[in-house]
Length: 179
Image (cartoon, rainbow, N blue to C red):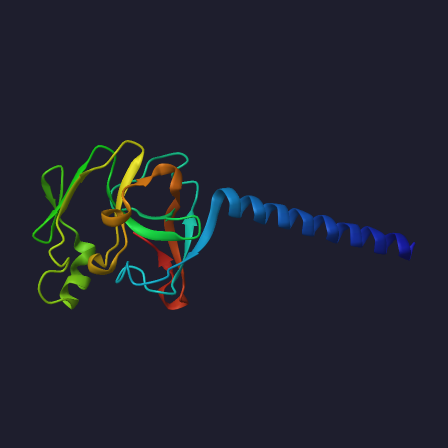
């Protein structure tokens, strides 16, 4: 009798472990994943070494919104975190340190802290104009002078988007939902 109970208990543990592994795989593959920031391209919004939970479902059922923080495949080896600035069909222009979308000047309050840290022009007078193709978004880092983004790598195809940044979970002192 004791042998039957031991086998039953062992089988119960095996089933529980297999279910947990399968659920973890499904969640990580289809629902959410973690992402660690590497570099300073998103300072002050996201610092080097901070960790986030990325919602992979958000764009399966909807489109990115302007100013969403997203993670995308930049290359086969690297993924980046950036801010969506332009949507399909938008004309993006940077001139005299100001962002224009479809010829309308855009207020970017999330850049104020970074701009205060710099003297002179924040973007080093980087000027460009580009129209975002269909099925793409135009992304920029919040640390505009130090960001490798759509200004140099081009617009990001929607198939390369991993998901929307949802929660900062590391460091614990900064834990919380991202706007």
